Each structure stands twice: as structure tokens, then as C-alpha cells.
Amino acid sequence: MKAYRTRPALFRKPSLGIALAAVALLAACAGDEDAPRPCPEVVLLSDASKQVKFSGQGRDLTDVLFEAEIEPGRVVCEYDDNTVDVDLQVRVVASRGPANSDRLANINYFVAVARADQTVLARESFDIAIPFPGNRTRVSGLEEIGQIIPLSQGEDGRDYRVYLGFDLTPEELQFNRANR
Image 1 (spheres, rainbow, N blue to C red):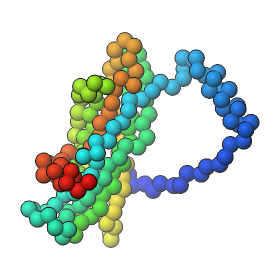
Image 2: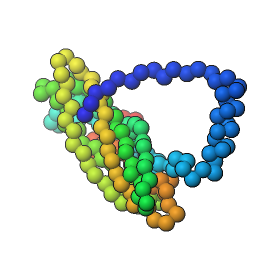
Image 3: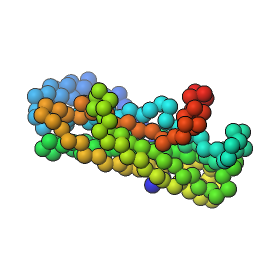
């Protein structure tokens, strides 16, 4: 996992000439068969987008080992014959809790591919260990996941969804739902 820091985006208002040129370019590409084809929609499951890991049976703030949040990043797709190769960035942010003496967060998350009708075609879990170096109590990282999806005749990325979330215990799921 690689730590990274985001930079603020720089925006500037386009001139009318640039805007008209962009519209003309888009119109010219509308019938172009080489235009980018769509990626599957990435869906972050809200109940599984956060994880609070406690030490033992206690549920007090002093019992927290770590808190983590997950979110999708950039999605890039490449079509080849009857497949779409999907590369997804997954951003994980972990905060060290008072009960975490080993300065490590062991986190499990999943990525699932489903048809638009929510029929799950593939699901895989990933384990990551996030260290808290030095006196850092909050660490951000980025993972890259690749998935090849076979396509039937007439299908493209819009016919699929990629679901993302933490692998939670029933107790962790209940905690998330109770603390929305």
C-alpha cells in the first residue's frame, strides 16, 4: 500500500472559444467507434464503508483498536474482444485507537462484481496491514485492484456493477447501522 496526499484541483473558467471548440470536438466524436466505452459503476456499500475494531468485549472509546474508512478512487477500463479489464483504485484511511498498542491495523475488505440485476458473479476479499509509523495516528493509502469481466454479445461496462466495502462481523455491521 502506498501512502499519498491529495492536492487541491485548480479550476479556471474556460473562454467561449474554448467551450465552442470542445462542443464541436465532442460532436465530431459522437459517432466515433474509438470513443471510450463505459466502465462499470462502482458502488460503495454505505453499511460497509466504515469499520470500528474494538479490543475485547468493551465498546468504550478507550477500547478502540482502529477506525477505518474505504472509498473508491479512479476507475479505468480497457476493452478487448469480449472482455473488459477494470482497474480500480481503493483508498483506505485508518486511525489508530487508544487500545492499539502494536501500532498496526489489520483490515479486510472485499470487491464484488455483479450484473445490473445484482447477480454476484465474483467476490474476493483482500487483507491489508496498515502500520502507524512514528507518532502518526492517521494513515492513508491506496490499493489497485484489477478484474477482467467477460462480456456477452451487446454488453458493455454499464451492464455491471463493482461493489466495495469492508468485511465486517455481524457486530461491526450492527454498530455501523446504530451509529449512522
